[in-house]
Image (cartoon, rainbow, N blue to C red; front, side, top):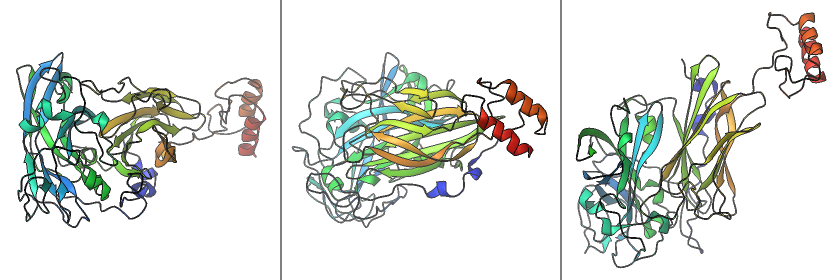
Length: 476
C-alpha cells in the first residue's frame, strides 16, 4: 500500500478560492470580495486579537452533559466559552435577534476519513459575562460582550431544551434569524439536543476511532464585520463507560481555537497528534455568501486500485450545496460509490434522505433535489459536513470538481481543484506479449466493429480505425 499525493504536484497544496469578507452590503449579505480574510488560530490559553469590529470565537469547550437515549439515539450538550477578540463590543441582547446562537457538533475520525456523527439545534445567548479567558476584559453590563472578554455557557445551559432554536431559521452568512423563534415542542430527553447514534460511539464497532466536539457561534454584528469565518473551534473527546443507555463523553487536550473540526482529519488523521500528510484542506468562498471547507485524501488500497475520499463542510453558506461532481476520463472503472450525511432532527423541515450517488460515463455525480423542486431538500446546509467517496482503477491527477449551489444566485457553481481519476494508459500491445506487432494488428482486425475491451485501445466503445492507428503508430 502506498500514498499517491506525490504524483499530483505542489499545486494541490495551495489550490483554493480564498476571497475574503468585509462589510455588509445593501442587501444585507457579506461581500466576500473586498479584503482577504485573517485566518487566525490558537489554543485555549487565549485568542489572537486584532479583529476589526466585533469578533466572536469559541475560546474553550469545557464540559459535557449526557441526557439519555431514545430509540438508539443519545443526547448530549457541549459547554462553550465565547471570546470577543475584536476591537468593538459584540451585541448580546436576549430580547431581540441581536445575540449569538450556538451550535454543537460531533465528528469521528476513523479508517482514513472524517464523518459528522452528532448535531444539535442552536442555543440562544441571553446574558454576557465579563471573563478574562482570551485577554484583558473591558467589562460591560451583559447586553454586550466587551472587548477582550469571555463568556462561559456550561453544557447544562447549552442543553436546556427551551433555549434551543432551529438551525433552519438562521442565515449563517448574515447572522440573521427571527426572534422569538418558532418550533414544535421538544421531544423528551433527546429533542433539540446534540443527537448521536449509540452505535456510532460503541468502541467495539469503532476500533481506533477518535472523536472531536465542535462549538460554533453565529451572530449578526460579527457577520456584518466580516469576522464570521473563525467562529468554530474544536476539541478532542473520549468515549468512556456505558451507563443509563448511553456512552459517556469527555473532553481531553486543548481547545483548537478558530478551526472547525474538519481540520481534525488532517491534524489527527494517523492518531492523536499525528497529522495525516495525505489529507489536504482548502476554503471555497461563495461570492456574497459564505464559506465551504473541502478536504480530501487519495490513497492506494490494492494493485491498480485507489480510494478517493472527499469531505465538504458548509461553514456558513446560506446558499448551501446541491451537487458534487468529479470528472472521470473514458475507460476508468469506478466502484463503491458512496454518500454519507447526517439527519436533521427535532422537527426541522429539511429532508434527510441520502443524495443520489452514481458513476456516469464521464463523471461521478452526487446530488439532491434542486431548490425549485423542493426548497426543503437535503442540501448541504451551514454547520454540516457530508462525505463523498469512490474507488477507481487509476491513480489521481489534478482535476476541476464542481460544487453546485442549492439556492439561486448569480454564481450557480463553484469550481474546485482536487485530485481525481487520471486517464488510463493506452496500450497498443493488445495481447500483452510485450511487443506491438502483427499479432496485435490481427486482434484489432478480428474484433473490428465490436466493443471488445482488449482491442478497443482508446476505450471509445468500438474497435475501429482509431484503434488501428494506435497499433500502427506504436509498431512503426
